[in-house]
Amino acid sequence: MRALALIVLVALPAFAGKARLKELTDVQGFRENALVGYGLVVGLTNTGDTEQVLFTMQSMSGLLGRLGVRIDPRDIRSRNVAAVMVTSKLPTFARTGGTIDVTVSAMGNARSLQGGTLLFTPLSGADGVVYAVAQGPVQVGGYDMQATYATVRKNSPSSGTVPGGATIEKSVIPNLGAGPLTLRLRKPDFTNASRIAAAINTSLGGSGAKALDAAAVEVAVPAGQGTTELLAQLEALEVDADTRAKVVVSERTGTVVLGETVRLRPAAVAHGGLRVSIQTSFGVSQPGPFATNGQTVVAPSQQVDATESQKSAVKVPQASTVDELVTALNAIGAAPRDLIAILQALKAAGALDADIEVL
Image (cartoon, rainbow, N blue to C red):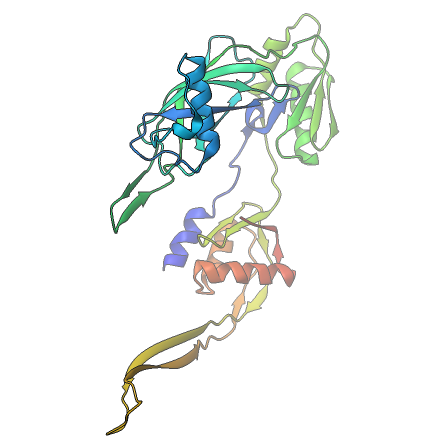
């Protein structure tokens, strides 16, 4: 029954009806830029880097030196500081003075960043230019509590975020020239590229859009119309998006996701499981009466049982819709983890018209 419920819940179409161009495409040249920086988190409760992390002590010495306090890194004994890498993404059209979120991750052996504050950290791009400066309290979605003989930990407390913690110092504004625009499909597909070009031509009343390949559609900017107005008009267009038949499985969690266009051909499936049970029992072996060199020892013994489930072959009918596909797969009566192996076998036998992607 658990297998039935799981499959019914996740067997939903990837696209239901029409999809807007805003969800299908991006404008070529308009993208985010990765930022990275190195900083220190202070204010920890004895959960920071230890003395073995030399670069943390050197960073603390350098920071204090710039503030007028001279101290040798070898004389620092604090566990309230952690060296971290700070990462973020500079959005398209981000203006100077705006704020962005940053992610803080410990570099050394700090146990937790909970309660810490990120100090002034410049964030640079791939060209080495500083585009933002980060600082603020670190928000951690976990904890790490330790006692003498016990440890309680939730999630990963050695990383966290600073919401709105970086101020943009240098903006990157793409050039909105009068030349043609190139719409980049997030998932390249010849059918979708052709449909997008046709929808744009219908909306603009001309033939200024053409599909260059499966991943790009070129659009000419009409005379007398600005690029901003054109993009706002194109983003709202709706297209019947086609998707590639795909089955996504995760063996770690036992999750199976079936796309709308997955088709199943008639097949016969016989699936059984082998269960191995190993039980260990302990007995006591004692030396004989009046023995001089004998010792009493514990003698373990193991018993191995192997049980193979007996299941008859199940005829799987042809399925052309999601409901029929779910019904056919549930007829097998397999658990989600077993269903993954069955789907892979059906694909190998040519009875499953879909790609299988394993996460």
